[in-house]
Image (cartoon, rainbow, N blue to C red; front, top):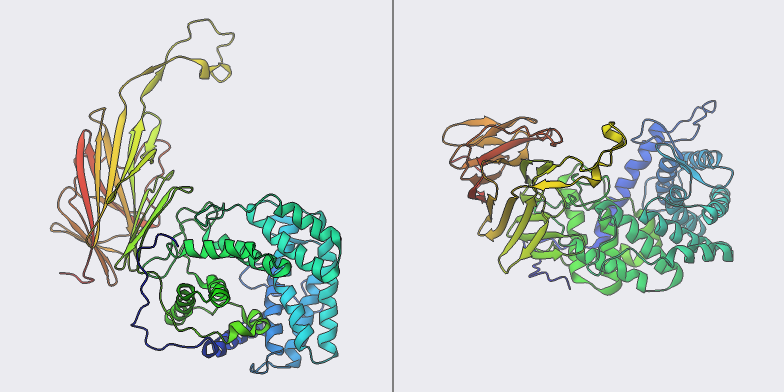
Length: 566
């Protein structure tokens, strides 16, 4: 499949819960969402936002309100919910639908008030919860009020279809969200124009690598793409679209960190570097596990839910309505449990290495100043190498050689100077001169070679720097704020935005029960701020600096230690 070296179902989790035993919790968490609607929906009829639900934003808008009230629709139709046939909640649902209708543009589209107006992509995202809500009301609706709400949703969708048929997009994932809704509406309304527009998008081809990665490399937008692919499959019957989901979910098994979060530091979108748990992946793994009897995915779906319950500070994913529409998923037996325990996978298209073994992981990323990440438990560090050499500020991987045990990363910085023009110019204005045509004088190159080798309980990072001598370099290792930094000479708490230079010896860094050993340190200068154009010290973490002048050859050992002070 992925080149995963091993997959081991954890035996520690002995209760092999069935999906239908989680089902009660899905209802309870949906009821908490409904309670929020009852508490915070705008119910003043004189307000322009009458019926809106603001949720986490500082202002209401249709998308959030649609998501909120559609979640409630699954409850009034579910005989196991305390809100089953609840008249007050049914009335609030209708208020929310009316609010959405009043804020639908004349061309059928909706706005995303933070940036997009008359927006087809955001209209498609508004339709995603409305479509299953409409289908639930069709199947489970029990009175005239349900019928009336269903008809109002139908009107919103009919007008939205017209807007989607003439709309456009901004980002790659928008195409598939729009296509999925257009195909759904084609099957619902029978308008050939909708199918033709969807096929125009799909004819561009899916932005997908052979290793299972979408163009945006985003853990967040993978979910969007995969939901769209599932919908396109369901509306067309073409199973090839489902295979994109399978391959992407296979790839994502190598992105799970030791603490159950997802690696995001190579994303091209706004989730880059953010802490992200795979909550919204649950339904995707469950769907494919049931469809293909995939035991690996079954174990992952199971662990996602178990981890949410263990963390205890978040709701289960909002997919009760989907489970009610697909009872085979609601009753699917989750026998397996666990994420892959070990892998080492290089993705050539996005130029990233992901490796995990025995509860620790590391990542190497090309085209980034933070080129190395290491994680043990919840403890995450990243590494940069500052190099002030002419216009160059940081080591970035230019060449990448892989051996059986190591990754060799190379960087060359050229030193150059402009020479005077050999012919007179027509201007003395520097900004109008054709400086790009000047001849250049080249001097010695700065060469940095970093070799990363996986060792027992950690990694060795060998750094060789030379070519031009006497260049002051710095290795920047950022650790979480509040970490305790312990060495023979000092013991301090690392505050955000602060840093120290380690002159020699090893340091132990610890936060809660996670501890790492890093070193030996080297510190021959204090030039750590960098020149103009440098990124500056991490404002979110505490930075440990190792510094030296070229030429040098140092190996930094990073090792997981027992989570206690020795």
